[in-house]
Length: 181
Image (cartoon, rainbow, N blue to C red; front, side, top):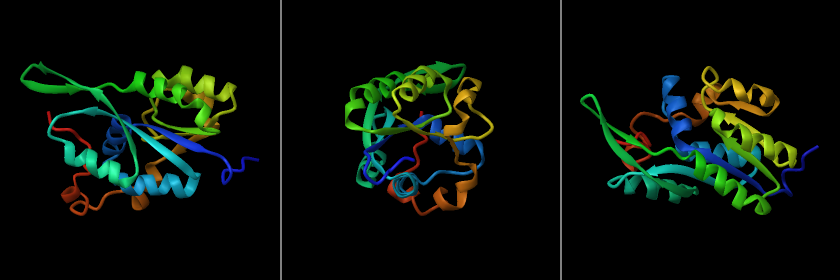
């Protein structure tokens, strides 16, 4: 049995996968409540949030840091697709790299993403007995590659009342992570 109280538990969070997964289910995540939830429920000591850096979103980043996240930024690229301006900041490589850099600093890890690009990381962490949970933001949209690790899954779809955002409360504080293109 895992004695989480004595162990160092770190969370590595793909912010875009988390944010878009929840939005796709029709609600918005309160990032501060989410962090409180994983700290209380899973005894997370440190939460790394991987996010694309967009100039002008400094208030969002400040809010997240004040809430307790360690932010790891990825430069973003902007391009046009038809008439739409698209901002891209894929954080997968950064999440994998930092989870390996930090591996000696935690006993167990929580990966927050349903992205199959993390399959090799999850496979490695399980072999090293470091994998604790995989938090799946959208229970209907996650990679089939991860099904093998279903016994580690935690789904967020039933937690809307606990970690969902009340429409106007957090918007003033800049917690809406949907970056503006």
